[in-house]
Image (cartoon, rainbow, N blue to C red; front, side, top):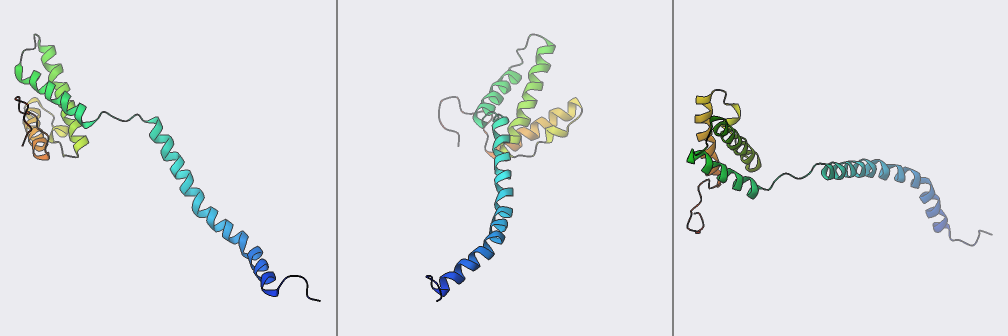
Length: 140
Protein backbone atom coordinates (compact mmCIF):
# COMPACT_ATOMS: atom_id res chain seq x y z
CA UNK A 1 0.00 0.00 0.00
CA UNK A 2 1.51 3.26 -1.13
CA UNK A 3 -0.44 5.81 0.91
CA UNK A 4 -3.20 8.22 0.21
CA UNK A 5 -1.12 10.80 -1.76
CA UNK A 6 0.20 10.53 -5.27
CA UNK A 7 3.95 10.08 -5.67
CA UNK A 8 4.45 13.42 -7.48
CA UNK A 9 2.78 15.35 -4.69
CA UNK A 10 5.02 13.68 -2.15
CA UNK A 11 8.08 14.47 -4.24
CA UNK A 12 6.95 18.08 -4.61
CA UNK A 13 6.47 18.45 -0.85
CA UNK A 14 9.90 16.92 -0.20
CA UNK A 15 11.58 19.34 -2.64
CA UNK A 16 9.64 22.24 -1.19
CA UNK A 17 10.80 21.42 2.34
CA UNK A 18 14.38 20.85 1.19
CA UNK A 19 14.69 24.06 -0.86
CA UNK A 20 12.58 26.41 1.27
CA UNK A 21 15.23 27.31 3.91
CA UNK A 22 17.75 28.18 1.21
CA UNK A 23 15.21 30.27 -0.69
CA UNK A 24 14.10 32.10 2.47
CA UNK A 25 17.70 32.88 3.37
CA UNK A 26 18.40 34.16 -0.17
CA UNK A 27 15.29 36.38 -0.23
CA UNK A 28 16.07 37.74 3.25
CA UNK A 29 19.66 38.51 2.27
CA UNK A 30 18.39 40.52 -0.70
CA UNK A 31 15.44 42.31 0.87
CA UNK A 32 16.62 43.15 4.39
CA UNK A 33 19.48 45.50 3.32
CA UNK A 34 17.18 47.28 0.87
CA UNK A 35 14.49 47.76 3.53
CA UNK A 36 17.02 48.99 6.10
CA UNK A 37 18.45 51.49 3.60
CA UNK A 38 15.01 52.78 2.66
CA UNK A 39 13.97 53.21 6.31
CA UNK A 40 17.23 55.06 7.05
CA UNK A 41 16.68 57.41 4.11
CA UNK A 42 13.15 58.15 5.26
CA UNK A 43 14.34 58.97 8.77
CA UNK A 44 17.06 61.25 7.42
CA UNK A 45 14.64 63.03 5.11
CA UNK A 46 12.24 63.63 7.99
CA UNK A 47 14.98 65.03 10.22
CA UNK A 48 16.40 67.50 7.72
CA UNK A 49 13.90 70.24 7.02
CA UNK A 50 13.56 71.08 3.37
CA UNK A 51 15.35 74.25 2.34
CA UNK A 52 13.70 77.33 0.91
CA UNK A 53 12.19 77.05 -2.53
CA UNK A 54 13.86 78.52 -5.57
CA UNK A 55 11.12 81.13 -5.86
CA UNK A 56 11.74 82.40 -2.31
CA UNK A 57 15.50 82.55 -2.83
CA UNK A 58 15.12 84.41 -6.15
CA UNK A 59 12.69 86.87 -4.56
CA UNK A 60 15.21 87.55 -1.77
CA UNK A 61 17.97 87.89 -4.36
CA UNK A 62 16.00 90.47 -6.35
CA UNK A 63 15.12 92.43 -3.19
CA UNK A 64 18.74 92.49 -2.03
CA UNK A 65 19.90 93.42 -5.54
CA UNK A 66 17.62 96.46 -5.48
CA UNK A 67 19.03 97.46 -2.09
CA UNK A 68 22.64 97.03 -3.24
CA UNK A 69 22.03 99.09 -6.38
CA UNK A 70 20.10 101.83 -4.57
CA UNK A 71 23.04 102.54 -2.24
CA UNK A 72 20.61 104.10 0.22
CA UNK A 73 22.04 102.44 3.32
CA UNK A 74 22.69 105.05 6.02
CA UNK A 75 25.87 103.48 7.42
CA UNK A 76 28.90 101.59 6.18
CA UNK A 77 27.99 98.66 8.44
CA UNK A 78 24.58 98.40 6.79
CA UNK A 79 26.16 98.55 3.31
CA UNK A 80 28.60 95.75 4.12
CA UNK A 81 25.83 93.65 5.68
CA UNK A 82 23.53 94.05 2.67
CA UNK A 83 26.36 93.20 0.28
CA UNK A 84 27.29 90.12 2.33
CA UNK A 85 23.65 89.00 2.39
CA UNK A 86 23.45 89.53 -1.38
CA UNK A 87 26.60 87.44 -1.91
CA UNK A 88 25.26 84.63 0.29
CA UNK A 89 21.94 84.64 -1.55
CA UNK A 90 23.75 84.58 -4.90
CA UNK A 91 25.66 81.50 -3.79
CA UNK A 92 22.49 79.86 -2.48
CA UNK A 93 20.71 80.49 -5.78
CA UNK A 94 23.64 79.05 -7.71
CA UNK A 95 23.48 75.95 -5.54
CA UNK A 96 19.76 75.49 -6.15
CA UNK A 97 20.08 75.99 -9.90
CA UNK A 98 23.29 73.98 -10.22
CA UNK A 99 25.45 76.76 -11.65
CA UNK A 100 29.16 77.14 -10.98
CA UNK A 101 29.66 80.25 -8.82
CA UNK A 102 32.96 82.12 -9.27
CA UNK A 103 32.00 84.15 -6.19
CA UNK A 104 32.57 81.11 -3.96
CA UNK A 105 36.36 81.23 -4.37
CA UNK A 106 36.90 85.01 -4.55
CA UNK A 107 39.08 86.44 -1.76
CA UNK A 108 39.70 90.20 -2.00
CA UNK A 109 37.17 93.01 -2.35
CA UNK A 110 38.15 93.63 -5.98
CA UNK A 111 38.04 89.91 -6.73
CA UNK A 112 34.62 89.62 -5.09
CA UNK A 113 33.21 92.49 -7.16
CA UNK A 114 34.35 90.89 -10.43
CA UNK A 115 33.31 87.39 -9.29
CA UNK A 116 29.91 88.80 -8.31
CA UNK A 117 29.43 90.07 -11.87
CA UNK A 118 30.46 86.69 -13.29
CA UNK A 119 28.09 84.89 -10.94
CA UNK A 120 25.22 87.19 -11.88
CA UNK A 121 25.96 86.55 -15.56
CA UNK A 122 26.00 82.79 -14.97
CA UNK A 123 22.60 82.99 -13.26
CA UNK A 124 21.21 85.08 -16.10
CA UNK A 125 22.50 82.47 -18.57
CA UNK A 126 20.77 79.77 -16.50
CA UNK A 127 17.45 81.56 -16.91
CA UNK A 128 17.14 83.45 -13.61
CA UNK A 129 16.09 87.03 -14.40
CA UNK A 130 17.74 89.21 -11.78
CA UNK A 131 16.02 92.34 -13.08
CA UNK A 132 12.53 91.23 -14.12
CA UNK A 133 10.35 93.61 -16.13
CA UNK A 134 8.45 96.06 -13.92
CA UNK A 135 5.32 96.42 -16.07
CA UNK A 136 4.01 92.96 -15.22
CA UNK A 137 4.86 91.28 -18.53
CA UNK A 138 6.67 87.96 -18.56
CA UNK A 139 10.41 87.90 -19.12
CA UNK A 140 11.52 86.53 -22.45
